[in-house]
Image 1 (tube, rainbow over the protein chains, first blue to last red):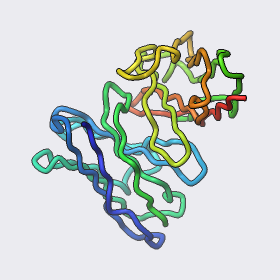
Image 2: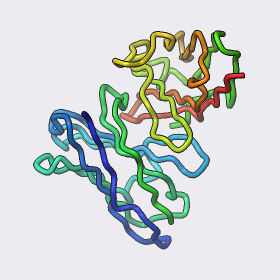
Image 3: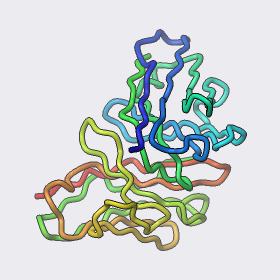
Length: 115
Length: 110
């Protein structure tokens, strides 16, 4: 069974930093790209970032470029999102999701980040 | 990259069919066959319902179907059931390696 479990969320002051993590199991982690997608309270889904299977191809939505860094550790089956210079508008539930040709076929339960 | 345009709401009676549209541009929906649709119940994570315009993941009922014409994609739910009531989001790969979502459509089963 594919499982994605986010952790590391919480309350942070504007301008602060936070790192959220995603632990994966039930599939060959090193063979799949991964996405971070967020959802502000009461709002729709917003793609944040993508990293390919080897960690070499990385993309961000414009609003987080220069502030957020996506990374992965294939030895630990883990995905990370380092968030710096956080803004009030970054408040959201952050989901990690397994990529399948620009569709996310499995999602974590999400973790709340409040700025 | 702007969000894709979806109607905020849609509705239908049990057993009826309903279609939800998703309009983009030639830089996203119209330019690539990487349109996907997600169902989200309140307080839950999104669930993939359609990928690559019209493909269904294993376990998704064949009542759900997808299509695309030009810059507009559509999700059709046939034989509406009470459990289909949820928010639905379209998404598409976009130019410059971006991924864009629609604003979401709240589907009500009357």
